[in-house]
Image: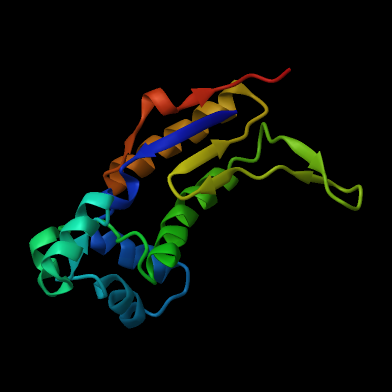
Length: 164
């Protein structure tokens, strides 16, 4: 298995790819454009203790002085961002799920043998594979996914494990 951390993943996503990811999951194109466009021309404000102290001392009317315009990426903490990120991650999850050889199996609550699922949560990924070959294929897909979406991997936060 491999645990992979994506570096600044939320900041890396191009808006056209976010729209495609939503559309691919069945969201009508106009709604997908609306969801992604919700944060266009909006000011991103990092709320840190220092920023909050500035706001208190200067009043809340001049928030644009403390923010910036995001050129790309999906905002974190706004309403559509979880849906957008799930849609983007579904592309990787679907690709990984197509690798049928070398699967790891487990038992469900009813005693049935089922395929263990890879875990993709926000910018953290856990790829499960029963063979080195199938794990390598998943890493190749991850590499292509990251190239297409402009995402970098954080090597210090990523690990591979062998369980025998």
